[in-house]
Amino acid sequence: MNDVGLGHLVPERGIRVFIANRPPLDIYQQRNNLLLMECGEIDEIARLTGNHWRKIFNVYAKIMFALLSSNKCLTTDISSWQTYRDKILLQHNSATALLFSKPYFQLETDLKSKQDNVVNIVMGKQYAASLGLDRKHNKELIIIDNDFAISKSNNIIICPYFDYRQLSNIKIDHLIKLIKKMQEVQR
Image (tube, rainbow, N blue to C red):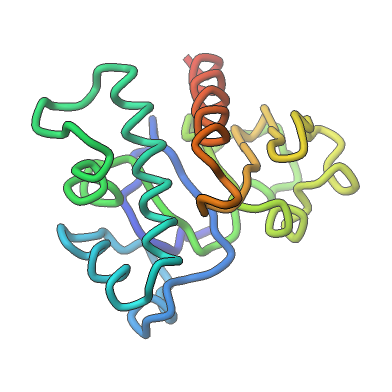
């Protein structure tokens, strides 16, 4: 199955985020592969489409900056999540992807088989449920609380949509802890 979205995947590490919609620009509507982002492109999408997409990129950058800072994996010129967003997020060797395609691991008959050591985040409970990632369809799913659930065998975290109202800073911190815990298990 082909990943469709924005970013650059690195098989042995990274964060893949699945989203139900695409930026409302022609170039992204008909994509059928992974598009490597260029410096300034995130800002351009936000400028052309409004605050909704700006929030999605900002939340993703906050999460990645916090993860990489805590692991001391950032160079000194990346001193804020804003700089991370503008210089690294979804670009070459970032090991980040914002995917419009459905998660292919969900389509496998053997949910225990892993494709790689990437943490997969499904944005939004409704989207997750439409993929069969709910307690009704997936008994392996562990419900953590009203906002978060995990599937350990597929490295999946289900979280609120990347919007400040749904995924506040406190919830972002909780998501970061879940990602770190999942990454520790993978090692």
